[in-house]
Length: 151
Length: 151
DNA sequence: CCGATGTCAGACGAACTGACATCA
DNA sequence: CTGATGTCAGTTAGTCTGACATCG
Image (cartoon, rainbow over all chains, first blue to last red; front, side):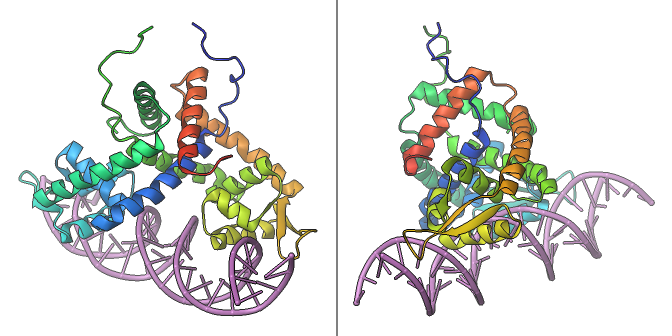
């Protein structure tokens, strides 16, 4: 059962360091990958959230992305100008504005998914499928430990 | 042997998304943790590198942190002013300036290690020691896949 | 002359806080 | 009145590119 060597019990130092380093590389590469399509990394992230969550208000998006509502709003202004998202007044509340992907938004998101997928293949080339699944689960657990449920 | 369920073979989508999300939370918490000590997250990272690498030139630090030499230099100016690092001319080269931790730098780094350690305990509370070691190894592999050796 | 290094200066993307109006 | 929401404005921290001098 014990397949791991015994020399790594008190060595998980620098997990935060590794996460930061990996994110930095990831962001740089993603920026280069997404630039030709005309979107930024925060924009891609927001589009990603809209696809999985459906319709959201600006305040809800800010909560999901863990940013200030003003920051989320600035992101939306640019994406609305590009025609990727549309604002529609909420029926049951006169102030809330529901935002959702347009067909153009879905199309460009699908297009970028391919590029991101390719990048992930490069970065996690050394990991087997089950290792990736495990990494995925561990990251989800870590994110869940510090933020609200439902990532 | 098969201890995992079979429903996660083609699901490792969004690894980049999770890394980005986790780094965002980590950065926010770290900033709050380190602020009382008077240093920023990039500064802590640089100090961390100097401890593991010993003495480095500004150009070498820029390579390690994967930033422009100008960015690294700006970081160093602030830390030199605080007395955490010292610049010493290289004996074998008149232009290169070797930078290393001062005793104050080592002290404040040790002090912050404790805070970072506490934060990691919160974020990775759901993971056992061997799971953390595995996560550590996987992250190292991922970083190594896209940057130079020797993290 | 050329390449690597160090450093000053300005510019930029992406986040922040403050302020204010609107709606239930 | 209070609280939540949307949005305009100014600001900040962190990084970048441009420019230039120095050293081998």
